[in-house]
Length: 310
Image 1 (cartoon, rainbow, N blue to C red):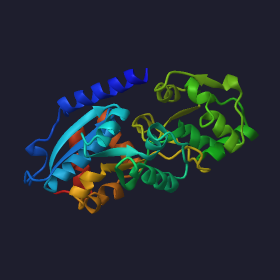
Image 2 (cartoon, rainbow, N blue to C red; image 1 turned 90 degrees about the vertical axis):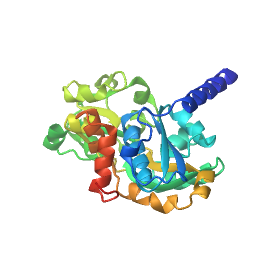
Image 3 (cartoon, helix red, strand yellow; image 1 turned 60 degrees about the vertical axis):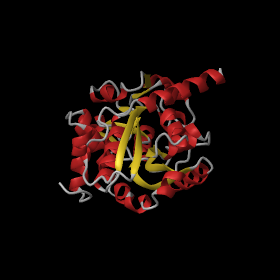
Image 4 (cartoon, rainbow, N blue to C red; image 1 turned 135 degrees about the vertical axis):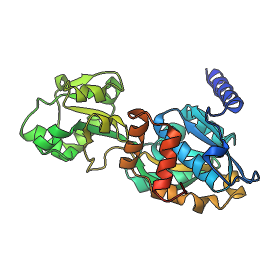
């Protein structure tokens, strides 16, 4: 079985090498490429990654690099591509590398998670540049108007409300997250409340947002930077006890690529410094809901933050 899985990964990487992004580098996305500095930028297969990849690619082009884009890859495939130097750099999440790639326990503290994965990945030939305040972690959400009416801003507020006032709130989540120790069971233990099993509605992943919007549930699990939070007028409850693990985004680069272009460490700092979770929700919203192209959204963000010229 392991040999078969390895074969699939190799096959996927060969496919990636054969085909790049449908929006692969072109002169109208950047200027000043001198043809001597070449980088391959990777990306995973969801909206946030497409946007982050475009931000990185356009910024590099504007700073004189020739960029090839390889996106729409599964998480394990792009990671393997980085390790094998089929891509030079891409945006990764601290929690994903810790848990999925390195098989370590999740870490809730953002700084500790970053420093831990940064140290571990040295052995894999991967360098983590400075992280952005983009945390695509798990979240508990409510409708904004309902949360305001009940005075609930944090998960502690939610726990107090359930313990003191009501146990009739319905929670929407998927079957796995309902029973995982780092899921709902863990949240209940950490925050000191308990929902009856009849109050937990299990549904397919991805349906939580609509169910919450439509009033089928009162609380729902989700991911903190999803565009539907803004589109459906939902709100993330603050994880004030820091229970959920950190999934902060940072650019990861192969050590050989950084050795070849050491200036990248300083050059790319402004990207992370100007991004945060709310900005990411807004950018995802523009692509997913308003149907702007990732390229237009990325370029306008770079211009608005003074990182490239219009």
